[in-house]
Length: 247
Image (cartoon, rainbow, N blue to C red; front, side):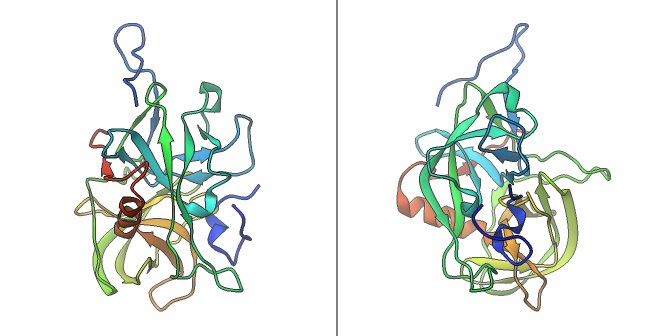
């Protein structure tokens, strides 16, 4: 959350492995963390937050979540779910992250990826692959991790989710670079880290990082496939990431 407001990648960073515990009666009373849910780094009500792109497991079967790297604090901060801070922290930051790159004005650039891995406490939280719906019943459902080739790519209907904006969808192409992709689907402050997905296939293709002017729209998203490649290359928490498959 170190960049400025309208002209930066942190526009969307609203400024400022164990089994779960069953509830009495056999239900699951853990916090549910979904694509587009808000996260914060304080137990108190705060004026800002970021969003979660995806929840999954790594090759050590740890429950992890992925958000924007420019939201990262010190690499060891506790994480709370926005709106449910009273239920306690649900995880912690890790050292597996990259804070992205910006130009002199503050627009995100393609030089460095923008992502961070969060280690979740499975006694307190469970993951979901399905966002909350908007008022039209649209949801983001993540079923696989998509891979796009550089250049213009026709993805059809694409939907994004974030804590501030909720779920929004549009139809059109995206412009794919080495790390980033550009879309016409603009999100809002606080939506940094939220997912972009293809509606027809359920492929997770991007993570919201900010604005940048291009011929294919102002919204900038970090490529999901590049995130996974980077995490695997580091070989720590999150390596071997696969999406959870439960709503």
